[in-house]
Image 1: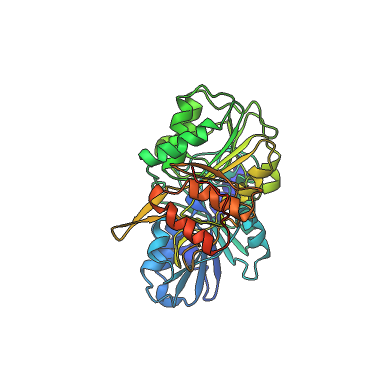
Image 2: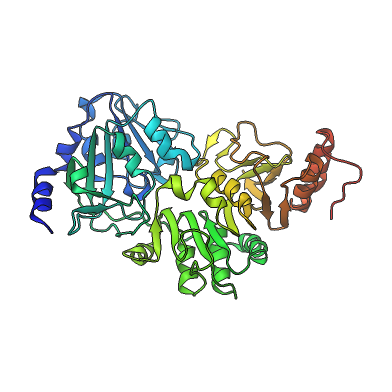
Length: 447
């Protein structure tokens, strides 16, 4: 490590409390996305509650404890603005935390062009390396967008952060930051591996039947992606690729089973491309200094134009509800906020435009609400439900009863296809609803 880098590091090193004192009332503070979200800085900032008013904190999935929200139940001092709601965010949504809707690939652009640009950007990183660089670890989502326009850039070091190779925009040099916090080395968030139930395994089996050698995968979070990964690991499939906003645990399982090598990818050949991850410690260790993986900012990974250039792209995501017009809600239950659009729409559109591409939205046919079974396929979406994927974008919907390919279909064909994959107990009512909405023809047949 050069003496110049060491001297600059020592000059810029401050405590978390000293960093928190840089915040002024009315400031916008951008916390980095996912596991890059600062921990010690937020804890220190919470101790200044009585000195500050109307400080806005903006973040994309804050996986650590939200100290600033805990100390301020009224929101007079600190308000969080979440690009995506998950984990700890859910306790505060609609109280002192509010959602900022986005298509995820536009996130860096929105940060750069926002009418409320960040005064301060704080990002958790690896410790500085011998060349003077701090690595963003397993999250390169939008750090550089915020650093380019923030008045002050602060890094919070954590020895537990894996060093993840790029790509580009996966690190920052000591000369490009203003202050360094030597962090308390908080444990990284551990995302438990979701075990697939029988219904999810059935849904995954329909997708596996449509996959072939050389497909490139994007997986979301949950039991169905893990079921797909387990089935692929046990299959005869080979030469698969990865281009996914989130690097899911299932990718590691498939790679270790010899199914992934990226040899047939059109771009980033041989590389598993992603923008962030959250998972087990074993996943973080697998990613550490792994030259087969490449971290990129989200405006590259999730750009539908980039996705469309990858032949045989397979996108697998989950939905909460779909109506007979094939509008998909994946982020709310009525007006009750659950998550966000995230990158789902990016991959729904990009994968469809890929040569040989397939986009799957998966959901069980029924849910139990207050002890009653309800159909996840409804005549119309629940009032207040957010449309994540408009009917013009939706490609294929999957339940345990099969796949409905609605792209290019008319309204009556969509209704027929969706009722075909609804739970049998609800099909008669859905037919009656479709007739009332004038999207059912006498020639329709339900198998």
